[in-house]
Image (spheres, helix red, strand yellow):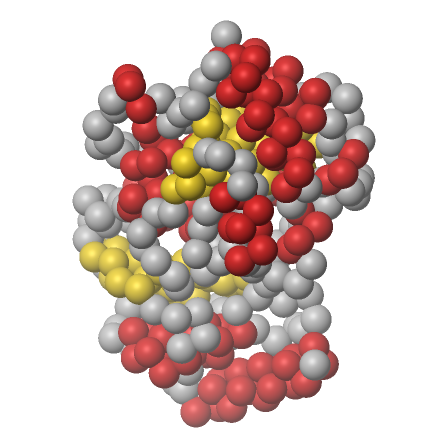
Length: 344
């Protein structure tokens, strides 16, 4: 399947190159198109690069296309719209509107749809991620996606053309009414099924239940369970038996407000962890098979607990070298101690 996809993609790009005239790069970049792929976390971690584009080309018009639901930054860019990640015709139609620069963000799984559409455009400057399995590209500047580099740094490298060391924050100002009587710890036991084997990144649900029970009984704080639209019915039915409030946001914007209103988020390596980092909510995030150096939330208020390590890690710079370990190695007591430290 992978070989077939490579052949189709390479062939389409060669055809595009043969029939699409190239345009010289203008002296002044006036119109910029950014196409942002990936889950909620990937979209949030692209914000620093989008903001860097805005700063670098301060007089340019920037249009952001979200392959998924837009994140709530309506006032930051001139215009935005949403499109399906595999909707080739709509992406091609957008790309053909006439732009001076195209930027496509770095994600773990490359989007062939956008690359092929870009190849059929006459955008003079096209910046996008390189495929490891091909020397041909639909982008005029293709950048490498490093598996051990933080996503924010990888995207910024693509804009600035230089290697970054530290990750970049992606704070968003969210207006949320905060009612003291509604204080709660928000637990997210799920994990967005963005790829095969995503279940491995989930801490066992029974561990989340034990943790929720201890928070309520030993600390005396209300616990609510955050459930996303992708969670399976089995997990939802199990969580209902915990005796906690279940919160299911109707939109991405509502998710941001709910996370902002909570006093602490506890969860797996998934989109809500980056929402907490964006709105400044303290969080305890659990890592096993996924690499925290690539996808840890960028926040001074985040504690990362990595499978196989007895102690939590405070801050991105202290994270250990990545070694694949199962989530079952994380002990409830380790997480509970981190929760007590934050809530104290």
